[in-house]
Structure formats: structure tokens, C-alpha cells
Length: 440
Image (cartoon, rainbow, N blue to C red; front, side, top):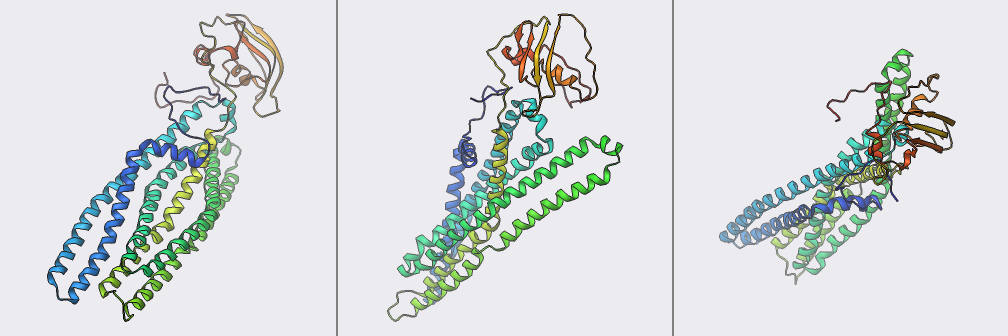
């Protein structure tokens, strides 16, 4: 059972069983955009493959002095590229919109989740790390879709075209595309397995850096009052260096990108094989066929070069997704108890053998008992950090008791509807925080 201090009436539905399922569940809310992106990617690749085919026909027409054939090939290339531009625009627009919606929805789900967390959670969770997940990590998920997934889907279709069209010239010409496809897939599996944990480290190091910076800025008065500026600078430099080292480690992995080598081998192999078949005495291949085939093989250049950063974007996005989902899935023990007691509070308060604390197995308040009658004014006196504010915050369940009970008008505060309880209790904090607009 999931508990929350706050819930929305129409929450975003998502599958939280794993980061991959979670991301997919958000993306599948936009099926039309996915369809436009996939159709646009396939059409873009098919029309890109049409260009070397038309060029091959133009070579054959030139060899036969067929000017009409050359003209038709030129018109075919022009029309194919015009239609390709339209499809590519639709594909890019849909994927960009899909990425923005993923960022919007994941940020909203995270914000709603944070509103439902207990104050104990927020007390223990560094603000800077939370902000890093709510800003930088959700942005990385946007970039994972566009350009990341957009380019991966496009490159997959570019790989598909030579596999489909090469056998039309000669069955043996399928060998080079198959060689590239198989070795490319194996290289990518190795690349992603190596890159994924490093991407997790990069995002984690960024969160720690951001967290410490936020704490230093928030507590700048204490830092200056205790003359700890140099210590904070040294600590920030240490965290920044750790973040830099992880980014450099990621760059080293990306530098050893094997598909670049595989592309060179495939192009050389394909050209040599096509020329060898062309030179056979009984060969049916023409010069135009060889030109078209080599042009089709050159399509492998697009997936090779774009995947160098596209898969890195996906790895970073999934690392960010794991961090965001981990924060969302952190359990809270407080529940809003929407079916609980509601009504006007008259003001009688009872503390019965109360023990409470922030950390597991560590109490800051122990065995506290006293009564306050309605309308009575009392003062709680103690040293700084003795637990005076914490004691008061047990009334509105900012924190919950571990042992004993806190009652208002004879009812345990845990039996009250949380919203009804908090709307009738005011606490004036020692630290004043001004919101930029009304919270009413």
C-alpha cells in the first residue's frame, strides 16, 4: 500500500516496475507522435536510399548515351529529396514534441510525488540533489528522445535499406550489409553495457555537486560567520573534480567507438566484392549497379556517426530516469487519511508518553507527557536544538510519533483527515521564508 500526504484527482498513470517500463508508459501516452516519428524515419531512409539507385540508373543511361534516362533520374532525385524534407520535418517535429511532453510529464509526476512525501523525507533529502533531479535529470530525459531516440530510429531504418535493396543487384551482395549489421549490433551491446554505469556515475556526481552548492548558498551566513569560505571552496573543488573525472571517463569510452572501424571495413569489403562480381565473365552487373550498391552501403555512415552521441544521450537519459524514479518510489509513512475525522478543532491537546525522531532508531524526543486545555497559553522553554519546534510539529503531523500518542480534542492526530487538521493549525517558524506569490 502506498501512503502520501497529498494526492491529485487525475494523476499521470505510469508503470513504475522498472525505469524502462516507466519511460515507455509515459511515451505511449503520445501514440500519434510516435507513429509520425516512425513513419517519417522510414520514409526518410527509403528516399535517401532512392538517391544512389537513381544515380546508378543515370550512370547506365550515360553509358548508353540516353539523355532522357539521365533527365528522369535527375527529376527522381529532386522529387525524392523534396518529399524526404517534408517527412524529415514531420519526424523531427513529432520527436521534439514527444521529448518536451516526456520532460513535462515526468517533472509533474516528480513534483506531485514530492508534495506527498513526509517532512522526515524532505529533512533527510538534500535540496540540491532534489533540484538536480527536477531540472537537469528531466532535461536529460527530453534529450534522450530528441535527438537520442529520434536518431536511433532513423539510423535503424538506414541500416535496413541496404539489407532490402542490395540483393536486387546480386544475392551475394547481401554479405557486406549482413556483416556490418551483425558486428554493429554486437559492438553497440558492448558499448552500452560499458557506458551505462558510467552515465549513472556522471549523473550521481552532478547531483552531489549541485546539492553541496545549494547547501553552501542557503547557509552562506553561517559559512561567512564561521570564516569557512576556504573550506567550502576546497570541498566544491573536490566535488567538481570528481564530476569532471567521470565525464572524462565517459569520453574515453565514447572515443573507443568500434562502429567507426567497422564502417571502413564494410565499405572496402563491399566495394571490392562488387567490383569482383562485375569483372566476372558471366556477370549481369552494370557500372550503374556497382555505383548504386556502393551508394547504398554509404548509408551505413549515418547510423555510425549519429549513434556516437545518440546512444550516449539515451544512456544519460535512462540514468536520469533511474534517479527520478528512485526519488518518486521512496516510501513515506504518512498518509493524508482522506476518510478520517474532520470538523472544527476546539483546542484540547494531550501528549501521552511521546517519543519521536528524524532518523531510524534515534529519538530526539522521549517520553513526553502533558495536557493543554482549549484557550490555554503555555510556553515551552529549552536550549537551541532541544526539540521545541519538533514538539509543536507533531501536532499537525509534520512529523509522526514513534511511541505514544498526540491527541487533539480526544482524537489521535493520526485519525484526523490530514488536510482538515492542518488547515486549522498555524505555526510561525523562526526562519521566515517569503514566497514569490500568495499560497492561499
